[in-house]
Amino acid sequence: MAGFGAGEILAATIHRMDRGGSGPAIAVVTNHTFQTAAGSETLSDPDRERMMAGELYLRIASRSPSTNNLRIVLKPANPK
Image 1 (cartoon, rainbow, N blue to C red):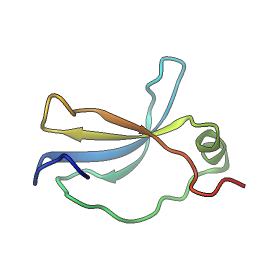
Image 2: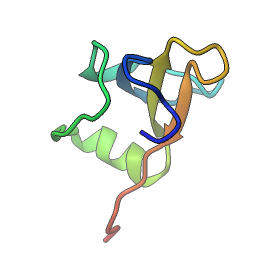
Image 3: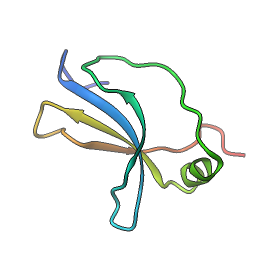
């Protein structure tokens, strides 16, 4: 990820949004330091619907106080 140095990113997790905007983790992408990550995650039907509605996000935890808990709303690449 651009803007992060080696060993700065600690973990990446996928979360559901709740009414307050934050929610529980539903998947761990990686739970150790990394510079790149690849793979796939199979979502349940309800979580797939949440993603289509913009209600899932990727949380990046880092060592840097300015970028810790970075959140990226997940959206389908090719919505149908």
